[in-house]
Length: 253
Ligand SMILES: NC(=O)c1ccc[n+]([C@@H]2O[C@H](COP(=O)([O-])OP(=O)(O)OC[C@H]3O[C@@H](n4cnc5c(N)ncnc54)[C@H](OP(=O)(O)O)[C@@H]3O)[C@@H](O)[C@H]2O)c1
Picture 1 (tube, rainbow, N blue to C red):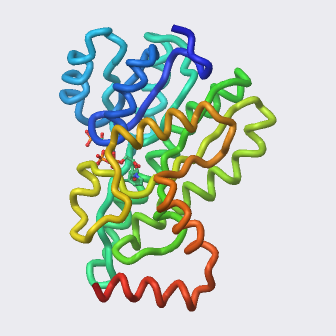
Picture 2 (cartoon, helix red, strand yellow):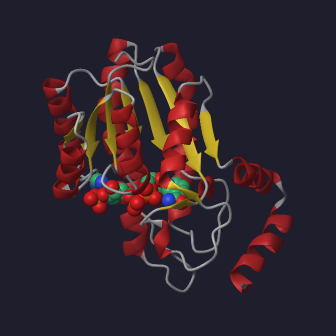
């Protein structure tokens, strides 16, 4: 099946949560999917379950720069040129003032920020050269403002938002389509760590649908669910004084 966005998709963080839902929906829509995460075993199980044979495991750790270079080359050699790259792999470690540690922040930066950079680099080079391709970087609405327990996670996601904004206009000139994905709360192993009630929580299947529908449109930023996005967009622009009244309430809960 010929998709508007192409035929070959690469999804990172494909073994669980949003990435897992994405690869299943892409396969069902006729894409050939290269699926990456550290757990090759889980990817192989997912590939076996998908009877069409559309899912191809390419296991790897996104924090290893050379590995991602080699992986992208291997995907293109085995499956063909990548048309769509969804850089979704990420992790979350709740960090507060009391639990703040260099190690935790470093792990979040290495995975969420530098891991995404490691994947973006080989894809960008190829897409710019070909003057085609679609890239989706999964950040978070938590990147809009510093939220309690998100002292490391939010920083990495804010950095991704800023990076995508910086790259977008130039990539447009090269015919490369860059999208920023900012989800709210999605029920996955990542959010299962949260001990607080998560407003507007949606399923991973719904999140994947929102992303794939959004990618068919020319819009830069894809945010969901709608109600929570509106609230977070409002919180993004309120003055600091008001924002801290709100965030103090969150820590006192
Ligand atoms: N869930 C939410 O509410 C939410 C909200 C906003 C944004 N997001 C973002 O959405 C993305 C997916 O989140 P999720 O909730 O689906 O998380 P998840 O269920 O924890 O899944 C994370 C995926 O990333 C992979 N991964 C983690 N570290 C990796 C590494 N170093 N190298 C390769 N793969 C790695 C994991 O597989 P392995 O462990 O096998 O490597 C897994 O497949 C993340 O970027 C997250 O920040 C999530």
